[in-house]
Length: 330
Image 1 (tube, one colour):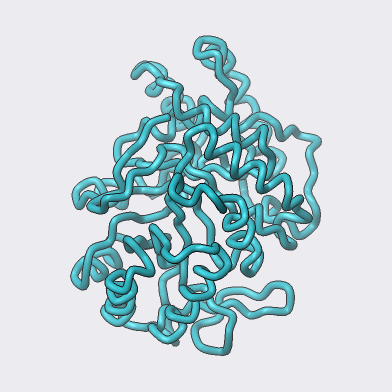
Image 2: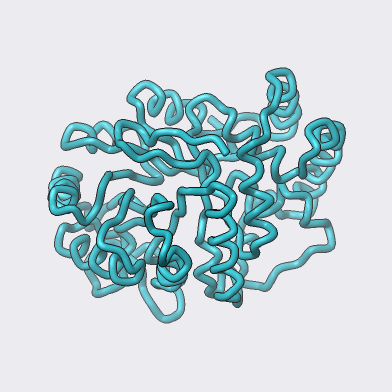
């Protein structure tokens, strides 16, 4: 496993991290087996994964609770990253979405942040959160000034409740505002070999300012594993049904792309998942690839990508193939 520092913090994390959105279950992901989820988290840790990313809104606290159970007795082996800013406690904030009878709002007000951090600490069963990230940025008509948000987060850090501040889904302009008020050590954007949008401005910005990039959805919700075929279907409300790459004609083109990489998986004695993850963490500026898994076998497979070292010419070949299928969005 490769390990990398998270920006200007003293946090050192595995280049392959475990994402736990699906572990939360719910209508987007369907039923989940908590015992198997715990085994997946523990198998990841045993294989060298140290960064575990979660959020309160993942199953409305369920993901955090499962992470807390899984790391009990081995808390010192992990960097726990969770989030704030998607709030369903009252009607404060700007409506973001509705699910399971709850209205989730974007809210980065100090009052709600303090309630959120205490709830996360309780669910995780810990006295501190290593990386505390704003999940979604505040928007009108309830747009808390970033100065106010950062002042609260800095206070939480000084109180020892969190160790470092990060952001997610945050533009360079928004990061400028955060940085004017304090230190942010990471940004968590969407990034994969098929969706390289952040390469245009966000990734160069983060490299320039020594901000770690935690890339989510590097496997495009499982499509880049090669385990989803043309005949694979999902429940009506499943999140994958909202993604363009799962449309039949696009899915066919992705599967053809993956079939063309068989010589590479043979060359490196790895799976498609490991090949794609290895490509992702080899990109300049990408610090961590956050890979979701609810089964121990999948978690182990993903973690072992951290020891796959691709040659420069193969990294370039994969990029060329991907660019032919999916040009960079601008």
